[in-house]
Amino acid sequence: MDTIAENIKQLREKIPANVKLIAVSKFKPASIIKEAYLAGQCVFGENKAQEMTEKYQVLPKDIEWHFIGHLQTNKIKYIIPYVTMIHSVDSMKLLREINTLSEKNNRIVDCLIQFHIATEASKFGFSFSEVEDALSDKTFYQWKNIRICGVMGMATFTDNQSLIRSEFKTLKTYFLRLKENYFIDQPSFKEISMGMTDDYLIAIEEGATMVRIGSAIFGSRTLN
Image (cartoon, rainbow, N blue to C red; front, side, top):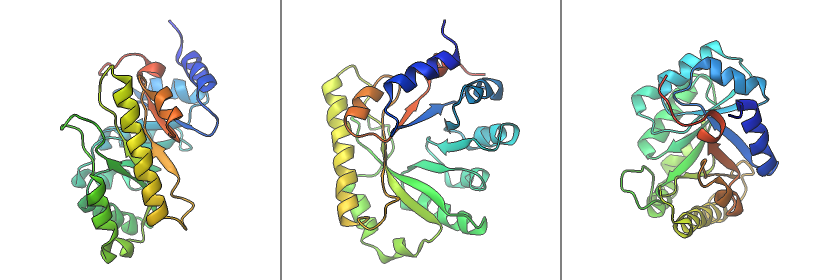
């Protein structure tokens, strides 16, 4: 069995230098994350606010913590003091609360707009029309403690690669339309977070700038 360090090395050989590898460390103990950190991986993704905060408290402070799961408004307070980026902004209510708590913490927090691009109804995310409506509202531009840096999406869990590719193409199209119509003068709007262990190569081909990979680094999911 390959070690975590070997897995990271193999992934970096496949992932272009301009694509950020986010090691999805949910359910993994701090000791395992430390092993990846010592192998040169400094960006980790978690989907539980309190679990991520517990890990933040005991691990090196130069780690970038990315929140990638569905975020409840009452959990935002745990991560706002230190989180690097929130990928999973799926409602304006959530974005408003992130801004409020960021202001209280004297921070500007980077966020991605999560779109629903999969066939599964269970996945979270905006429709494109919902985002356009929000960006047409002057209220949005009064929020000064968030920075919208791009988009995020999750493809359908399927072996149908044509479907996966089509969904990633949709997300890239959404990104380009938002960039042109709303963020043309904002260089920070540049990220497309898509692709996981089973589909990251397709995601990269379709324009991903961030890939979220867990089991290819840490092995199959296990609760610890």
